[in-house]
Image 1 (cartoon, rainbow, N blue to C red):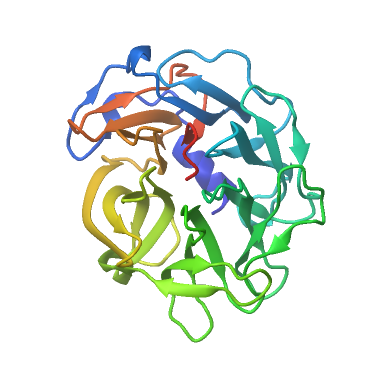
Image 2: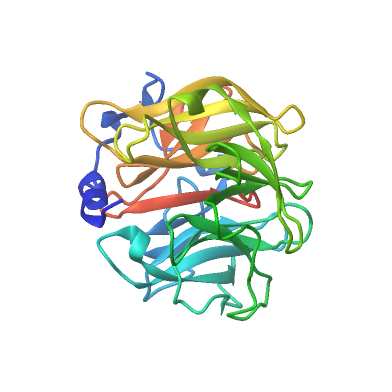
Length: 324
């Protein structure tokens, strides 16, 4: 997506909550700290860890442009990417994958910053392996990469081949990775991919009615791995405007997504609705809209604004210990 277009959707950082709605449910006042949903997120290019609905304290990172923190299942670590080379086309950025503790200690850089590395997360299989998507230097598309805590640039390995596109979303405790891909001799779609230690991975197609008419993006898996939330774009022409956030049931054994429920989209003017992510207890989903953060609670269908600085640009929320 072009950077100027992204700015267009978020330039009114003071967007009033009344312009945002979730499945036609009114927005409620800011959530109380007693709910204690901890999250990591981006605020004006810096990373924070905070209880949603409370003012921020000292950022974890400063002096850089740091994006999309993902919180490890155990160990209280964040993996994120640092933008080193900017470009109006986001896909031309040069970035470095980095890890830091949620208390701001033990920062280290995993990649050398000469690649376009995006949308990092962690495995849930007990190894706390960081994975991410790397743009292929030729032919278009991305590969799924993997590193390790304490790893050095150049030690990362590719989990998918050069000849086809694969974009990793989220991981399962059994070691499979939910991906969007066009595997060899198969159609574009959504799959559970089993890595194969340097060999060809196995792809299992997920049945999903929505993928026939559009694109699923930023898929996030609940803690118990029975539900997903994601962005949905009708049609196949790339755009961040006009997307709807959905909740759905997920069955890793039957390989299905079913029972789709929209819970947030734009009302009137174009607003960037994106990055729905589960809270640790999976009772709620935090997401960004118009440069602010909102919390959708499943039990009563309510939505609350949980960012507190109306002058700041908030993005990329991620729940505590809940790798997307």
